[in-house]
Image 1 (cartoon, rainbow, N blue to C red):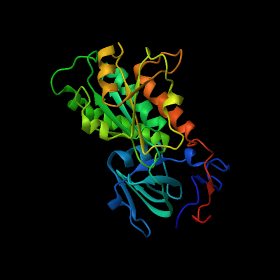
Image 2 (image 1 turned 90 degrees about the horizontal axis):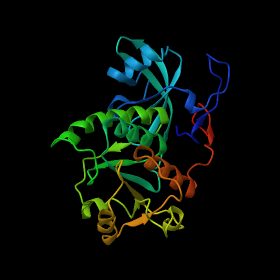
Image 3 (image 1 turned 45 degrees about the vertical axis):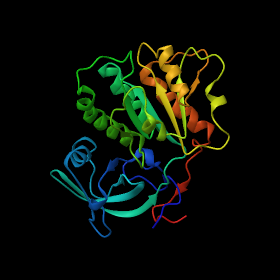
Image 4 (image 1 turned 90 degrees about the vertical axis):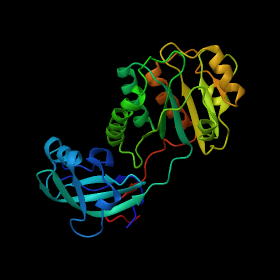
Length: 279
């Protein structure tokens, strides 16, 4: 059965009201842990502990479970025991990949700021976050970025659950500097956020039809050097300004992601669907 929209109609046993998907617990599970039939959905480890101990889910309640490939299931809990939660998929929907795909090239900043940047990117619809070390980035020991990437991936997964994303934010491997052809190949359009740009705003750079992918490069706390911007624009990137606003490095990418999603009509109200999964 396939969902006809993103919201679930139906009364909540706990609150006596009709909740949206946003009010229901959301979890991720590998596709091989989600099969048809009673009790066919099995959550274990940290996901199960969070559901059982923090959210206190009980048999008979409904949660949402995404398999990380774009399919989200409405799951009725059948058993909660120890570090295992079992349930039955009662409806599912395949979500198409977002268009445009938003790729954020985030200059590495101080640890706390970088953590915030990752979380906000997940919450705002960034699809892929690529750490880059520009000239003014926070200095780290060799290999430190790769070492912190695992932490960023955990933050990305948790924030993606909060945002109830069918496809969680992907934190990619660090890109070299200056960006090479492989980095440019990720994006049909690559924009460099630069406070010194005087002629082109974000809206000017966005084509009428959504490109397959849009990339943003955000500088570190000290911003990008003029020579760095020149290097990038010589390779085909476009420098853009956000007007009279100068945003923090940890929030600029998230702001731009939401602006792009608004520009291309991605923030329309979610359609409704019922528990049977029928339109």
